[in-house]
Length: 288
Ligand SMILES: C[S@@+](CC[C@H](N)C(=O)[O-])C[C@H]1O[C@@H](n2cnc3c(N)ncnc32)[C@H](O)[C@@H]1O
Image (cartoon, rainbow, N blue to C red; front, side, top):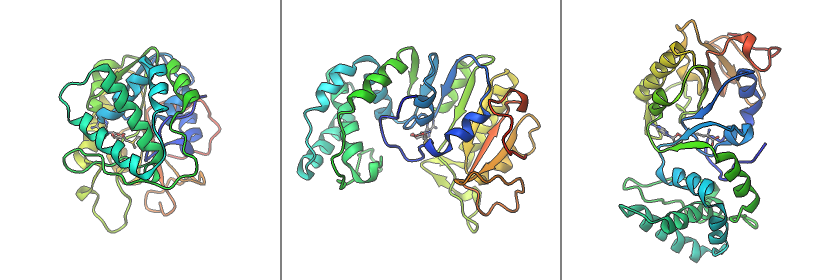
């Protein structure tokens, strides 16, 4: 059971046991099309499958961890935790991103800066301006670890036989086959009682992207592929009419509530086509 290497918004550590209890007892390959910080992936330590994210810098980071862990660790030792250095590092990170083609050395440098900025920037946020410049300010931390030797070495072993993609999540339609498990953790729709779900746009992920994800889930289901999706409550209605899928409501205190009109405390929904009798824990209080 390994740790994630980066901090990432939407990290799934709190939801791990709720998610895993819905995963099938047996499956072939494991895929995660919205990998982010990979909390679930590193916890599971799958030996075959694929990961993906639209964020190119994040994907370069994982490839470098897989292919050049020792060079990355060496590069990480060059940084220092000082405000002035942070802003120089951020500028260099953006210069490298703007290059059309990068050498392996430049990719290692970028991956190292990604980790350094993630560990020393404000709240471990990842945020870009409109032209793709990373713009998170310096953060106050006590003794931040931007070398992460142990985690990088462990991550490199886990990623060894995993395909790493930098694509839209729909790549999975060509990649997954029968009895594989696909766990989707898309950017969430914000929860608000007043706002209209159809107007939302979070992290560039719109209502129509949520519908594309639902349509893909239906297609994977037809191909006998196990699907688990975590999301925020407004999307339940996209899946409600699909008889192969169940929607469970889970909050931080692990309260479960089946009534869609009474979702006051609910933080997350988990949607799956894994039949109850094939799930890892069948004794959960889980109403659908
Ligand atoms: C909620 S985060 C995933 C969090 C992750 N499960 C964790 O534990 O850290 C969603 C991720 O989806 C990525 N993303 C956004 N739109 C995407 C798309 N169309 N295809 C693939 N990835 C996308 C974002 O870059 C982000 O890293």
